[in-house]
Length: 631
Image (cartoon, rainbow, N blue to C red; front, side, top):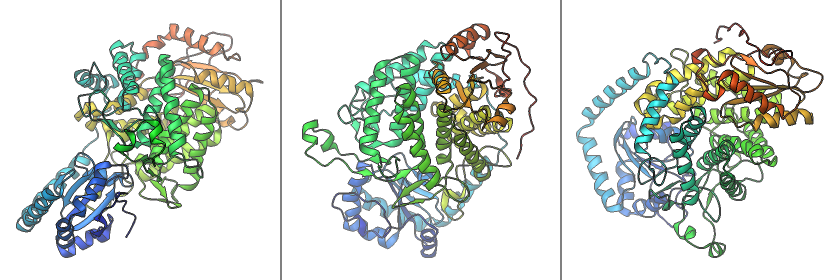
């Protein structure tokens, strides 16, 4: 039997004749004309383990599943594509499918007695209504196919999207405890990012209060492990004090980035302390010393976490899932780059580089795309869009912090592979799957999720700014068009999309530093640019030798010593040599261009501007002609 990841405690769930999600499982279901039971679990999921120990260890349930169903078991972390399509509202998920993979019924945790009744009812219903079920499934498939083939929405104005999201957030915000809604309460890193950006670019004090209330209450509450570090996944209470005790790399990486950026931009020292607390947990518990990458999660164990620290040290800690996921490690690498300059701790930059080297060298397929997971000594599929984008953004973060041209080359190569593997050549935007999986239920239809389109838009927009290539900006706009309908339909879940819209349509502050990245003078200018308290800026060190063509394409002139140009919209500073002059130039440019208001540049934004003359403080410039997009 394959590694199906049962409960670590005693159970009999392995007596069910589980199969992996595969063509063979669907073929057997069709050949025997049996419904499928799809069990979606996770290595960190407490109630998944309980269901193994109870429901799936029940003799009657085991017998019924083996006799009347094709039981299929999926790990949601290793197969997020399946989880996205079939999760019924939490873990564990129990879904009954037709042999074609259409959903018949579903629930989350089901205790043994109710499961016996549930299986009997579903089995009988399937046998009595097979024809009707197939007709309804075919009609639903036709509707979904038509919706996916619809003409793309126009790119909505960033202000429109942001207004809708903020209206929902204000309505549902918990003004006492922070966060969105009542119990159960989940951290929302994308919401935190949007509130921070909005508070600084629009002087929105309500957004700032919502953000700081949430970050303060979370760091003070039980959702943060005050003793061993790291955030738990969510709280069953609105006060953040009744955590579910699993810890996920993805959540901790995103929250780490939240606290680092807020610490820097809002100048809150306590947020730095929280960030250090999370970093210590990641290094102590999730770091793989062999690869330098980070493991996926740590299991929940209520008994362990309720012990005082001294007593915990006498017990075995909860198990760690030693799978390395590309998605979570991309997010973690970005957070580590942030930590290196926000905390002035360069060792974190080395750790980020080691993670990205591992992903690049040992987790890519022949087409240059990242496999989703690495375990048992090898990288494994599937190949999903959701893994490519965080890694691409992390490469750009590392490039910005180091100026190393080979890192930008990797980001560009990954962008090319993403376009070839996931772009919809007819309607634009990016599919979540590289290929539709015919004969495997809902995987036969690919999707364009707003969150994926948001990350794609940010990735390609930042690449456009760094390379001066307008075609990447066009791809960013494509992604926004592809995600527009979903964002409008679910504004509360569209925070990442709203922020991407702002970042694509707002003009960034661009600091370009011609100079050898290894020169201490270049590094000093780079550090000054990175530490600007500005929410939308690109800092770029360009080697006059290795990056001569890029410097020429962007229109910047190198000098005999490292220089810095500070540019915004149609104006640039004269070349600067003193790092202390960079924030001064930003302040002067703010007054001249109303930089603090961050006006929208509209769909034509994203063109890199030429530098100003050294003889003038600021110069109005004519942008270069846009190139036609390349396929």
